[in-house]
Length: 291
Image 1 (cartoon, rainbow, N blue to C red):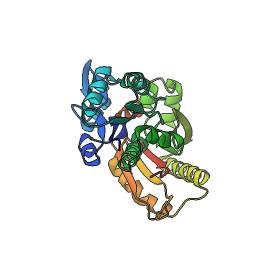
Image 2 (cartoon, one colour; image 1 turned 90 degrees about the vertical axis):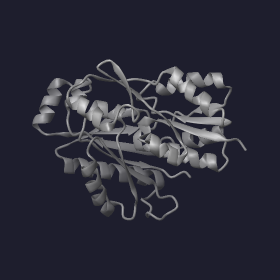
Image 3 (cartoon, rainbow, N blue to C red; image 1 turned 120 degrees about the horizontal axis):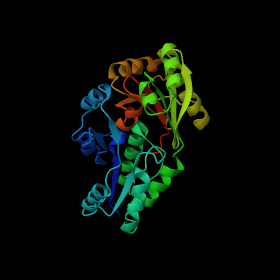
Image 4 (cartoon, rainbow, N blue to C red; image 1 turned 135 degrees about the vertical axis):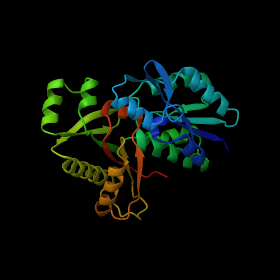
């Protein structure tokens, strides 16, 4: 039986500590602040990131260097026969394409899965891949399953401030100014490779309702109904936030009425996404159960 390792990157929200517990390898994503490189969860903590972000420090996201990627692969392949690599969505970064190019030199021993996931949904893909590897599936078989189900998930994100979308050129200064005056809470959607505007809410409560309704609609369209929590096909529900854990935990309690019996996993949102939307965001996601 082929021994298959699973690698993802820190955009999945899986910490180095959690990775060891799960038996998954995590490549830390690099960030540049004041021209100095930091690695997520290695030399850059969530606290330090947000402190710099709110102090208007220039923060730039970057891809891991090819050397850091191949060094990790080479080390892992001393112990494993194959690698399944699950990078962040190709629609949000060039990391995936770079990994695919590098994998060409590994004679099929490294399979890069471009199933367009990020944050909590990327985390779930890595966990699913590990379960499939433990069942004896090959890297190619795992890739086929993950690619077949790549659209069976979505994330909705409420942005608390328009400051960072304006800074990144994603909204015009005029639109941001009007939005701030009206206290609008934009809701973004990540489905497939795109990060798109989904709706504009007049307050946090309305934004939460929009996200819940959108997730319910997606699950119903995919599964025909919203299964009970103990059903075999009950999907995974996940939440994410940017420096907003208290509000996320409170919302998780409220969601118990909307999704009775469901366990909801909560993680900080990927710093690569947080860079562009700032603190205070809340996100709700669902992912189809495949293992």
